[in-house]
Image (tube, rainbow, N blue to C red):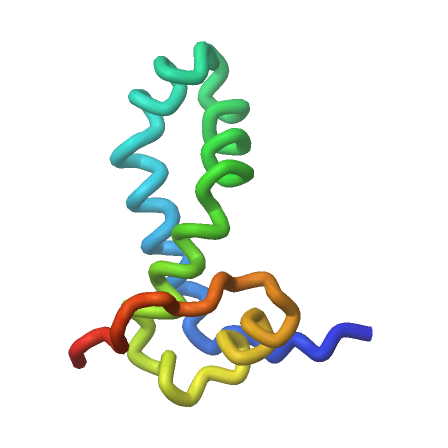
Length: 89
């Protein structure tokens, strides 16, 4: 059983990830020599999904200071620790 808390901003996180993928997918497919759109999305997510989650959850989410999901990711080693100063609100 997982100790991971649910994300209450999952819709916002997924929307942010979708926008990033849409913006960069064609270049990603070209650089990776991928012709299939679906395979490009999968590859992009596998390679960069963790960093998109870290950026949103660690810096952009309005609930990051009280987020149980973010804390559970840090405790489980699934989100890199912040090495820069706290973001300015």
